[in-house]
Length: 110
Image 1: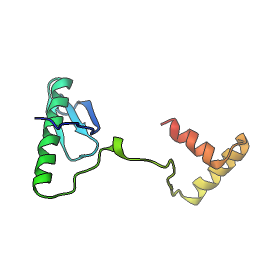
Image 2: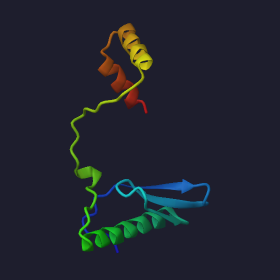
Image 3: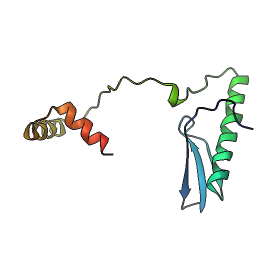
Image 4: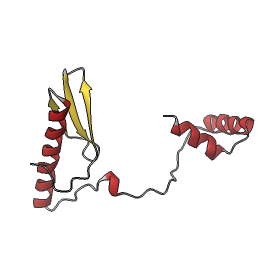
């Protein structure tokens, strides 16, 4: 039982602790599904999400919006300690770019 037009963000990874694949959904971080194959883990987590969404609908609860539907401005504020701010400003000046460009480049490397 999966959702019709399911737009949620799923990921399957290996769990060394459980010695199985674990299916995850970014919009429902408390949910997971363990299985012996990645395909079964994906199918399992999709079924769990479908069940939870149906329960939430039946109870009039707010259902998380899929990440894919959200619009992002490309701006966000990051607070850092003053010494980190100073070090980054110096680094940006040394390479001849703005602090914004330096931070963007560093974040893009992650």
